[in-house]
Length: 178
Image (cartoon, rainbow, N blue to C red):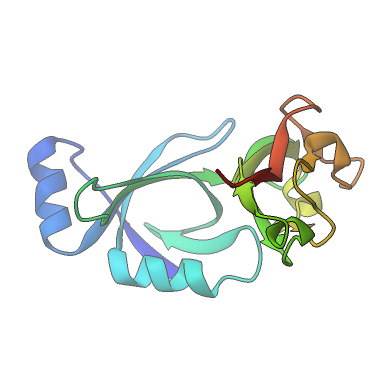
């Protein structure tokens, strides 16, 4: 289980001091809960995220245990070091918005016909309870030829998972190379 600390001060000076000590700054929030300003050891956080098998992961902060989901993160534009992460508390049976990763599988037929695979969206915003949420959305692109797209309406998800964007928005496709 990932362990973190509660940040006493949220000012710029305290944040810089934590970052120089190897901490990752985090904000934890949830519906009906007080916001928690936390910090995790950066290397431990990255290891925990890479090794997780479900969408949510467990963390202990200030003596309390939370089931958390990554909402958003910020990286340094030059060094690409992780600077900040926003986490949502995954509350059972409560419908919340989540950003689910999209994983493209296979090699499209259109690549042989001078096409290029384009992934328009890497994450998809959905509303669901954490119990019904898939860990990722897998797309098989093997049948795509030049000019073909996979749209939001082509996705097959549980009825309890509602996609928050329009049905005609493309997720991935094959375009002709210039």
